[in-house]
Amino acid sequence: MMLGLITGHVVATRKDEHLIGAKLLIVQPILPDGTPAGGPLVAVDTVGAGIGEMIIYAVGSVASRAAQHPEAPVDAAIIGIVDSVDCPRAGGL
Image (cartoon, rainbow, N blue to C red; front, top):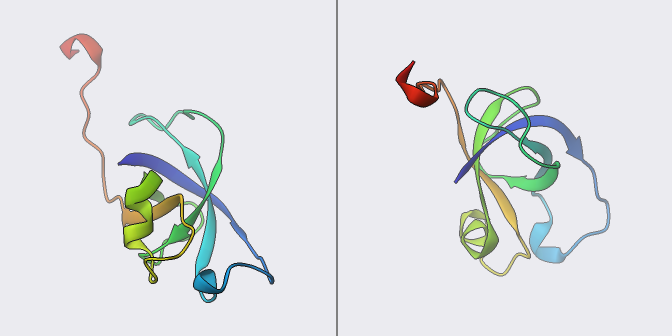
């Protein structure tokens, strides 16, 4: 699982039939302190997340398990909305 920030949404009128009705969101991967950590990606929303929210997402074969249809071609899925992050700085400071 990784942390991300929802930065937008994707509308695709033509898509795989297993994705019909799925909400697609743009996720910016982030570090625990909120700094960007790589390029953005598109993920299927399974928890009702919205733009501006910090989320937890999964990628790869486990992401497809969170989708409504197990056969859906999903590579990234939003699986949680983050309430808070408590992460001490490196070196214990």
